[in-house]
Length: 340
Image (tube, rainbow, N blue to C red):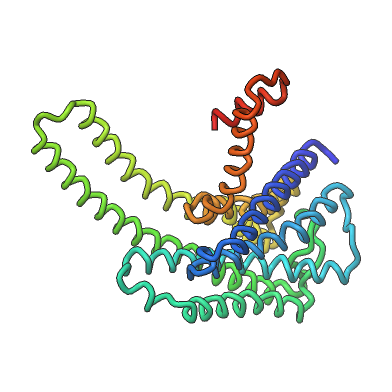
């Protein structure tokens, strides 16, 4: 391996570890929290989490093995399975993100009628379409035997011989157009609508706040300043969330999709390191999704912070129960607990 392959191998290892741990925490939160399970968006979230876990445990390690050995590390039968699962999971994750954006759009734009417009039945219909859409393209590729080991990506992926260039190119363009492009359009349209509504509400709150500040003539200037700062943070918060949802999607998937579309041209040769890097960026979305869609939300923080708080309370209790202890390790643990 050269320096580039070594760095990319380390990148895959980091992504694999972070993705496994974070998605596992999301799965545990879903299992142990009835509040999360009652929410309709949890259907999309758990589907996204399971897809990311399968990708992490199945596809990423074998891609890493391909980078290290510089050759196909498995037989052709397993190669077909890997190509099928990677295409299916990648498609499913993109469409799941689009489904989550639709749910947020309905929740923000139609808050009073959300329960009737987005019920469990509606969510099940959307998920059924996601699965059918995700299965169509890998099934077509399996029928035409278009899954093969691609050294540039160190993994099994959709690839065809020169004699099948036209049908394969057509299928590739249709696949990415109806998967990546469709998901991106849904994300942009829905989140722009959400941002518009959020800014409208922020503007109304700002007007009420300013009117209140004008009436309170005796209020301290520092309080006025804090109110103005909070207004600015509130406006920035909505923009930052929407930028995160769309930005991570584009950053992680766009390089890989563009590379796959460019390389179908006969006169174009894509470098090994760039192709593998674009594939690694797509993998990194599995590590980002738990934080973008789940773990930083209040319902999930309540679940995973509870065991941590119990441990910290236990440490504080030990500190108060043994105040004269001179043990260094206990002292440091007490300091950490008190700081918490």
